[in-house]
Image: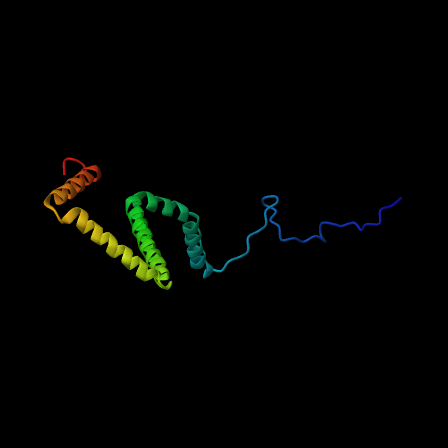
Length: 140
């Protein structure tokens, strides 16, 4: 039984493969004008491949500064959110006057409790000093 596939001779096969190293394709010919472009592309790809290393090094070098900036940003966000919540509460009818009355009542109680007599003022100063030593320390 004969095979019906046509025989292929070496003269019929032409390919773009390099015969120097098996399995490798020959690179396309590039013009001399492409060399500067290729150099810039190589610089760009090297930078992109090392960007995580650069960012990590920057963060390690400036960790305290970045933490302080983050805390400042979060403080600003917290103040903005607090003001938005207070504005929303202030828009509720009758709630704003109630809060004003509560604030006036607390202010009156504070004046009556701590500021009217000399002994109560001394008590307030002692409480303030104990709080200050708890927060700051005794040496300050």
